Length: 177
Length: 115
Image (cartoon, rainbow over all chains, first blue to last red; front, side, top):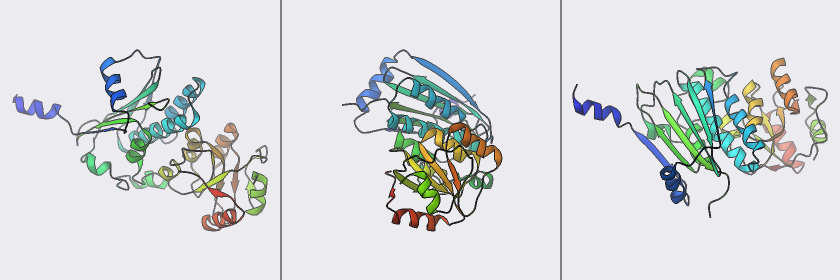
């Protein structure tokens, strides 16, 4: 096996975003790896629009019980829902992993591929590869990923054509001063 | 404006009988695209739409919807009506177009939802 090929396959195109003012908090979180309070996971089947969204709905209910502020709750639910729909609409299915910490939530989505050919294009508002079935349901505005970014305090998307896609985001429960 | 005023104004039909029509409607948003509707994270809102599939009801789990008005005479299937009923989410259908509904409500003083 050629070593260069291995290296190339390990370095996948990546998109990272950290909201202004959250740089230190996010760095601290990544370094310290605090202990999780609650962990949940939810299976997202391919093209199943009866199930799609249930994971985000359950996550919102859980966080509501934990007393998270309603505006922050809506931001978390929208980011999570958009990601969940993306997995159902564009991939062969995947899993949503949510981890609740003391002051923030981390949600990670991993799918079975086929991956995103051009991440930069996918992040452009209005760009969509949704098929007719998906569009008929009211999706495919090309705002899914931009909406996730808009509602997150930090976001990371890793993907390549022919590979799986990993998307994760962090949302703090309160403003960082 | 409360929901029952809105039903009269739009000549609407309430799709399940126990819907709470005394709810105050503070603002409204109108769209047929789900990602557009998901911009409403700042405050609870009324939604006007031509979408009638189950994901529209699911949206109310994510953002807080006061009620949904289905325009252009659209009526969701029974299982979608039941989803709304389970959530206590009033749903109304009207023959009026999205444009006409929006105009009537705006004239009656209903403001746009903050996005």
